[in-house]
View 1 (tube, rainbow, N blue to C red):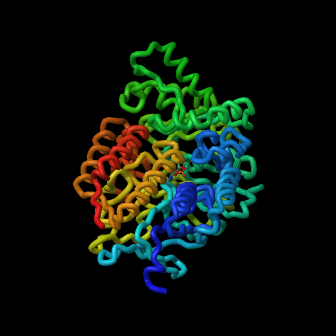
View 2: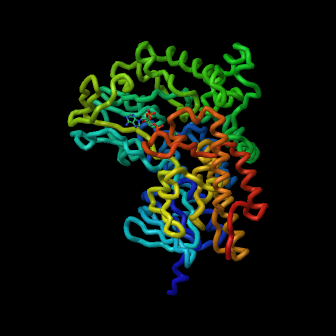
View 3: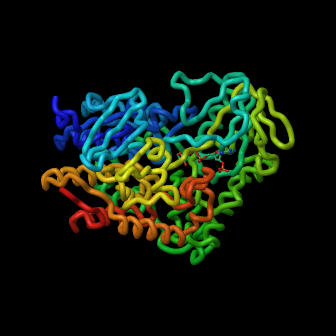
Length: 535
Ligand code: NA7
């Protein structure tokens, strides 16, 4: 076999939603390609995050693929917000329905990815030593797939089991009758707390920063609403692609400060009753740009917490006051605040009594020792850049990705990184990704990247690389837009601020999904403006 026979056209890394769809599109386009996946099955985020209560917080009729009409007509979601097992079954169904598994090598984590300038080829090495050589690489590694180290001293000293929501044991964990200590109150903590509370003898939650959480009003799927969706699916999907967030949500047309108190109350009550995480953000035009307007939403939600949580001190501890509403990812819950009304659930405010260490028996704060049988960490992710950085990526001229991004995670349109030719990054930093309905963002990226590969193949172009200056402008423009919002005021994972030492920049594209999609079309119409092509 000659070297040429061994060389792939495209290597896809990851078989979550992005990798599955990319696999489908490359097969349809007739490329010689392979998809590799670290897990033993498809599903990505929904393969790993199996903690109790894990579920989607975008309605499932919208958090699903739109690329195949028969698929979207035949699949039945059992609930408004599907649970993790059901979403995983959906990913498995997509893999089987389109015969995608035969193109995927499972149990294959890429640990080195190097570009050979002379041959214009990437070589990927997996943790089992397998090597793959490819002209192009498309990363489909997800945005919230690299757990952040919990940064709590002494975890190894704990005598009992330690679980991470981000890699929950596949066989499940029986917490019945146990004393559980849980650290972290982002989405993962907030979803798991009410479920764990029902099993555990005692659940003690260690909270550093309270989240803004809204009731999901999850329920079994409403057959009338589903029939309505399915009757109009193509139009509704097209409508979602014309929005800022890829989500169908009613947008207010005036500022909260221009509205009367009655109008505000009606809008906020409507959002509370609706259970859509993006509703409050969209209720008035100035919620994410004007501190005074934002404070109106925040005060409304603080009052709701006081209504829901019986003990006033616990209610106050659960009340966010240190960052604007919506600037950390808003959570959707099912019985979160009510869980604190149970006698077996306790809240420790780490701002008042800082966590000092994990001990063999449990957790020591500045004020006291807590004894546990089990610890659960729901401490989040090295978002967006983490999954790319951990692959040991080295581009042209020996440039390591960690050096290229040492100062800032610059990309061109979140699609490519200057100095890393022929490497495409689905939902990469600088693209709408997790600021939008991520499946909508994934579909748009996969389609743009695959169509680009088809076009380059037809033209005999073997190399495409982001132009340094175009990248510099893209990054600067996005950050200037972010500076005009309240997002920059929070120590969020959107800002890279949850990981010590990570450069503090707004990670997703903030100009709106519909604007971004249009820009991608224009780039292609202008012969890949901002990219450098070579044969
Ligand atoms: P998040 O949203 O990043 O939440 C992590 C939580 O863990 C958050 O409350 C953190 O507090 C807390 N945390 C992290 N490190 C520590 C330490 N060392 N001590 C105490 N508390 C800590 O991650 P999730 O997994 O919940 O959700 C991720 C996304 O998945 C979510 O936004 C949805 O899009 C789906 P902090 O706020 O940093 O003070």
